[in-house]
Image 1 (cartoon, rainbow, N blue to C red):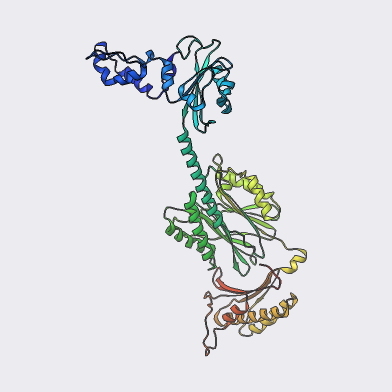
Image 2 (cartoon, rainbow, N blue to C red):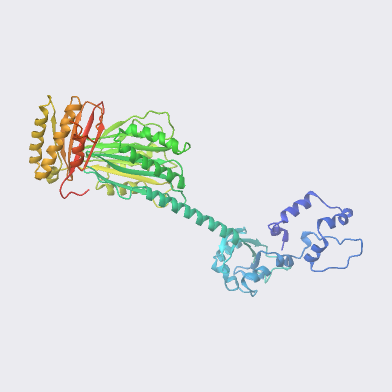
Length: 570
């Protein structure tokens, strides 16, 4: 056997060989350098004998090619086995192998003599090495003794043997199996993987806990959402969505994506989502909400940015008013299957600062479906982003059914699986077209408030007639008329034309709304006993289940209140 063919793989051999090449020791200097290069005790350890050395002389150091191969292999800490022939008959195992797995009879096939190699699936590898004449390595296999080894199988010429003579048993070439104990490395790697799994599970748990546990379901919309974290190889991101009922029949919808991965991104997402809900209570236009979020994002973390779309649906207008901070466009499918993009206007992501956001709008008529989503649904490494959005448009054009069914179909069409490389959030809303008996449950009535104080009795008479035609109970009828009287009187006293009264009923509530041209919002205050005014809003807040006010586009304000219908569920 040519020892130098595989001995170069032993630790330190390459360095010693390089040193020998770079610095050839001449015969007249070998004696002087022997003591400094290899101590006498080491020579005794290698040869097993300690011949008497005359005083003042140093015994010559044998070259590597002169060392007895078997004795070296017996002493190395790695596990070594030599098999030969097509059935891999065992020719030799070293002491380390015997210590690990016990003694082995030579001459038997490896399947019988080395059952541990069979259990590890290495016998087919021996066949490959024998056929190809090329070395093969398998990393970190756990053996029956509970320890992990990296196995290197090296072909050995037929004429070689561990003992230095001819082939062991003759017949074909052999394979030298060299196993290195890597248990410590394998355990450290497993601890690292377990730590990464725990960290990811923590981030996913945090992410899911910060998302809505149950979506609010407005009267005029049907909504479903889904969140898919990235696969086990991808850290969880900062995708989020939310649905917020603003009152007066209006609904805010929001979706966003915090740049980055892990617990930090999820924590920032939670802060932004909480802030959105707080700002939404101010009932501001979408671009003003994003303006506030932009400043907050810079305060949370100046190095963290996020994309976001904030949209408001008002059933009286039949449109979706939105503002985008660097987010992907909203897609809207009408009742005929035509899909439109709401891609303008859009501004930079939250956290960049110095930008004045603007609001846009897109039609959301009865029978339409809108989709808000994050980049994980459409972004692919080998595909342009516009192509991904176009694919989503095609999938949406043919997607029918409930919002949850549409959600699931879009996820499948985008190829999102458990091992997806990015997290995905999708929010689907539908504005159903009410026909048949349902149309009686969704009604509108409006009156222009012209003239002066005489508009108040006209408004009360109008409200009484409408509520009677809607067949409301007497107590709800009377409360509705009282609310109309107080809101109209407040508008006539403090507002300016144009003024308008709108009554609206859904399957769950009665909504009363009065608009005028003055943009000063009313506040509920405590009226003193001697005050002649200031009690109207207090009365409305007392008798109604909810009330509020907001500024309207182009100037002016709207003041509204709601009454829950008997037996209606939220």
